[in-house]
Length: 442
Ligand code: P5A
Image (cartoon, rainbow, N blue to C red; front, top):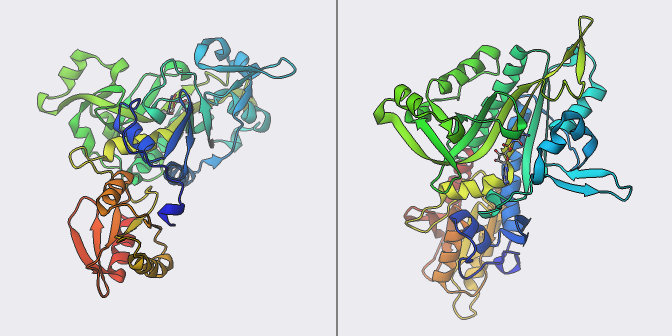
């Protein structure tokens, strides 16, 4: 891809309305464009990153045996009346009437719709557990949408739902998602901590938020620092191992604002490990038993008896994660963004210096692309006639992790190669490809 032909509308300055880094950077580097308050279009650079995040989220759902479906964005009010949430959801729900004057709504979440799908199709406990997920746009008419795509009105969420025969099995499902979330955030190069959380309008009495630390986060958190050292790598997808894993995390006091109790915090956490800080909620899981299955009459036959299924729901803010990664990875001091390799819009930027229309460095850049293509390295060549320093400034914001600089002094087989944030090295294209592909494996 040539930069001159790409659709990456870079802004010269930070837009005044953006108060936090991720919002500034996403507008400035043309990742998104606001279409109305709290509603955004995703342009190629932002969309590429979001799609890569979505892929990782999907792979980790598949690994725990969840099955992907796709439910619509528009739902009928009927099922929400059945569950009793139609009134309760209040002004955050965008309500619509169709031409027949039927009450419809743009889904803020899908507990009701998935329960309706389940109840008409599954009749016996022998088909349980069922873990279903979809990745779909949601709409919540937030009172104060802010911080760009971090708290917006239309956002992209992965939401999963589990159906089990009893509490014990349902907690096994809950713990599977707990593990899947730890793995997902790790692959995104984020350190997300599971914290006991409030259940709000979703309901139930067991819930964890997955929080990444960031000063600009909207969640206040109170935690024991030792929770950062808990490892999940070797956990098997088996009842006892998963129970133990959650237990390892729950050993340490770690809660969000609504669950905070000063006395508990001081009693349970030795002073040197106490941390009161802020974070971004990137995932939230809930166990709510028969809160929806009972009023919606969703049951299975168990040894001749009718049992209401026990349900949980599990959300990841796929679009919010794009901003959350920027908040976590942007280097304020150096003013450099560097995407984790797993989600970077390109693997490598080729930056040729162009002297007054002399295109020979562009030709050198094009010569490199055969090798890059052969080894699946996704690149962008900056063929614009901007000054070298303007190009470097631009790429430091775009955040592609590797850069190949082709300057006047580039001769023979070696190129100036930068692993962003580190010193540059002179390497040949084989060595460069090897480093890039190695970093994709990590
Ligand atoms: C769980 C899945 C639910 O909706 N029902 C289905 C449950 N949970 S939640 O916590 O309300 O949302 C899940 C995740 O979605 C992201 N999110 C948002 N992202 C951007 N803008 C918003 N306004 C917004 N609201 C929620 C969060 O990452 C949250 O953890």
